[in-house]
Length: 612
Image (cartoon, rainbow, N blue to C red):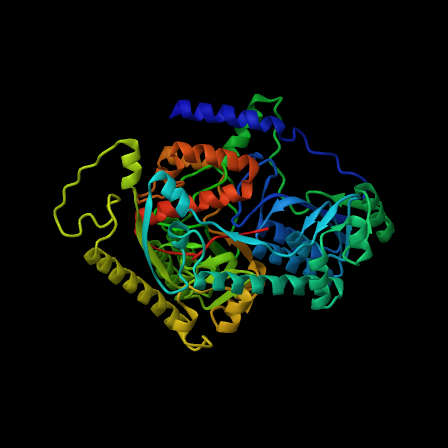
């Protein structure tokens, strides 16, 4: 244990070489503060504890970004806000939440200046929400609309000798089609087009409102795109073509008072340590391991369900628990929130395509315990579908973004048959069975008819339970028969609102404000449960015994049968270099296969669509 501590201390000491040695001397007083928010790197849903700069500014929490931008709206020192964009990876729901925050800044009387290089259609939908949008010379506005593509790997499975044997409950529950078909079925294609229509209408409406155009004018402009910078200016899509220096000079000129651009507005300062003193580092580490306890205010708690829903507990990494939304961790967080008297209300933030039926049921039951004790609402992010909707449905109020993907009430189950793969490798397996269904999920052969009936009965039970939860939770709110809404159909947040599957259009901030009002809170803090921990603390807790977790099932990475295949390894390496978006989609598909292989029956999104 002592050697581990010494090793960790040396690692942290090396990392701290980049930490500020001394506090900066305050500059002269200025009249106007202009926060600068640089949108770059990856935007995460849940917060990340990063006291030593592990992520080097490449990972930003959506909640932290929205909070800091919102704080600027209520800051009397702030005269305007600057946004610059540099290829931040963000989802459509996240885009909508940032747009809402920009509108809030403008409502508060803060002018929002935006500057960027080239933009995609979706990025333009975000950035055009500012008061003034300028672009770099020679940049492009790729205003070309929405393109989506779904992944089908049946031919790939055929090439390596793997056969998919799957069933589904709900005509539109097409999650297994990526394994069993080379193209979508009729219902699946209808569902995708329904979804894209909703996305496109929302995007057109966003742009039209921001640029004072009609919806038809925007559609015509999209059909004529893309545009060089000067062409975009002539069409009224942007306000200026200028360099970054000219852009900043324009901001100073418009404000017409001394200006201080604040690139770290609202950020917590990293710990400062005097590295010239050998005691400085150890003093800082001691403070980190034993932080001073502050009296806690009343709070609205946020619990995150992010990623595929899987049973068990996550493992620590430099970026927090990864690999999915672990039911054990989420149940414990909800129990903590329910038992804490200083937590007066709870928001469950869901960004998940679904997953394990068992794990989803566990989380749903935990949400009911919270609701029985205090106000409880759900805020949906980019996706809250299938199992993601399952864990959400019992909330008092469900918030969704207009472009959230949700519903997908249905079940899929089956297995991968790998006999031909082993034949190609020259490997023979000889099985022995006691019990008619002992080999139900054996990968040597497809289901026989009796086994298929067994699995179908189980899937029907899971599907009926799913619909029962929805019927009970949304009683009196659904606008049509549940069977016509369910069946695996997927909707945008706006479509789900019309059907009564969600209650309000709004983001995380709106959900927090709503539930705080329900709890009659005026002065409160927003508290994430569990509190994000840095990697060093998590490791120390784990090795000291504080972080021990029950020996539950834990789903790891992609399906080993496929990801470790020599042909696949080369393909994935090539795709990472040439088609990174498609490589991520393929890896997500492999992770889904691993979950299906482990669980047999799952509640997952019926398709993956890659939007460009």
